[in-house]
Image (cartoon, rainbow, N blue to C red; front, side, top):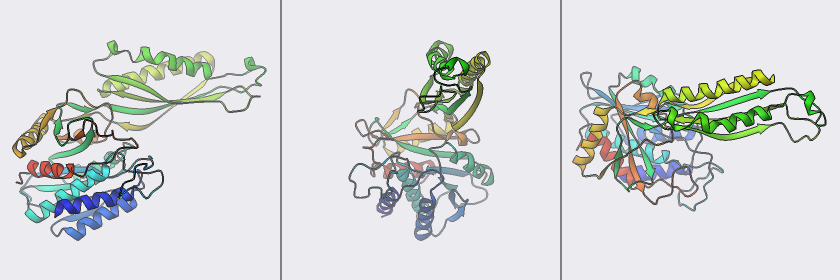
Length: 370
């Protein structure tokens, strides 16, 4: 019965997706669901997010489980019975499934009890990297001892539990390099200062700045946008912006790469008389599993009879869950959608309802529930 309710909840969330920091309906619907179907949980509204709390006793440890609930600016193009009703927005990362899993687990704990204090943390704005920063306040407020979460993942074995020691997700950051020169008539470009050539030099230098022999782990830089001048054929370009996503297995090496790029931009700016300004956004930490916690995931998967698979390298994509793991022990694991299932963040993707049960059972096992 709880599984059926959780799947129904997932479909309802999918039909009403909301982007980061716009999750008003989503948050309220999840809170209403728990209020309707539980009697032993305290619901704590924190504004942008909320959590539910099960209390076993002051002398008991407190473990948290986190699910995200924001959607993506991707239109729904597949004909689902529960397809998105919001133009241009859909749950193409499966956060609807993560929240439904956590809600289903909350129902199980409410009905059967547990021997630990449990925090069911429903987090906003994962896609921008900001949600977890705000939610980490719960770690201290509730004196959380350990935290767990999972992500559905395509390209790996269906319904198997996948784990990795150490770094699970790379750190990343969005960099904007704004360069301003001075305008001139297009017939007299020598009278102005055009940043196009400096921006081109930075782009040209990126392969060398990210060459693998300089780093211990994976380091990447992706050009996401170049915008220089305007469509005015009488004026030479005099301002522009280069937007990059930098990514690395190790935060220290991410900072190293950023400094190299900034130093080059400042050097070119000084040489050519160009003003240079930097702006960062969508910053994600490295997500590093704690050994004891990830070993618990392994033991639960074995005890529950789920296939257990070891990942050989971290995911390049970033995950703001890493902010929690900087403050408290914990682990992030994965449940496979199947090798051939459409990848997350694509038009064809939809969360597989069947893995909700696996997620709930894994969470139950972690807190010692049969």
